[in-house]
Length: 253
Image (cartoon, rainbow, N blue to C red):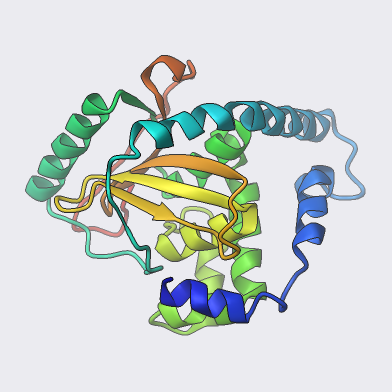
């Protein structure tokens, strides 16, 4: 058992009650619109998000088949961390080629996620709600998880924790492996990353209770971009958004 899960088991009685969190997610209207707003667009958002969640639940069994397909691969223990150094263009190109080869080998396809600094949260939103546009909702829940379970995560953040939270609240702030752990914990999901790392093909991020109710599959072009993963025959048809990737600069995706 990793150090993270040892710490998590010691803290299982602290913070927000998980059943309360589940109820809070089901009451999506409260998180998407103000109490005084009755606009049709907000109602539609609520309806679409609820329907998306139902569709996602129905297809999580299909995502489970991805795990069976890749069950022969060794995954490495996950340790939450902030983002590493952005690779230069040459290294990033080689990494992308390696990731593309792995996708082809294992019969996987990427739903291309918009590159606007929110790619991790967009990819998670697609896996959770079948709609990347609910990334703000996912970010909000992840930041809340980080805030209310500070003892679980602050040891992995090499800066003032309150500053880290303040930054992570902002749309466009890159998610990292700390936010991925918080997302796994918040949503009770095993998050599986097919990576472009040379020596690490698969990373599995397990929720703190070691009892995931769903699997979320992402590709990770290491330190550059996240996409949402499907089996080749299950890839939904959606309009691809523009991408803007920068290297050696202030933006990852």
